[in-house]
Length: 162
Ligand SMILES: Nc1ncnc2c1ncn2[C@@H]1O[C@H](COP(=O)(O)OP(=O)(O)OP(=O)(O)O)[C@@H](O)[C@H]1O
Ligand SMILES: [Mg+2]
Image (cartoon, rainbow, N blue to C red):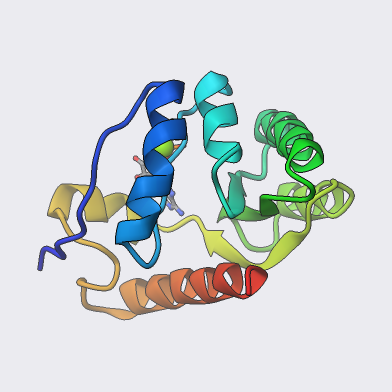
């Protein structure tokens, strides 16, 4: 069940700035998971990334923090002559809700594109943590539906950067 993906914990902004280029030479792709709050760490990541992807939950608070993140991305882009390419996507969406419509409307006005792919709020995602598995490992329609959503999201992200 367990997929062996090499990982490393790198927390200091200096270490990130110095080590990301070396790690990028060793792997086809590297994914840097940023900390929850914006910080120098976020800036360090944005100064090294090719693509910045911002998940945003459809709530007022999350929309505001996505706007703060977009601001940092735009700062990095102005220093780095356009890099990193960036996109936001909606996470934990609930179909047919007013909040989702409002989030899509607001995010479509930000200075980075919004992805068509959305990740819906699903019990199966919460279950993966307890089961030490991913949605690709689990059986049943909810797991299959969820894994397709993630596949679509990843494909869309990979299309951003050619
Ligand atoms: N689409 C989803 N459906 C249901 N639950 C979800 C979904 N996405 C995330 N969760 C739940 O939300 C919690 C936090 O998810 P996640 O680790 O993605 O958040 P985070 O913003 O990265 O948190 P942190 O600030 O700790 O890094 C988890 O417990 C997970 O079960
Ligand atoms: Mg996290």
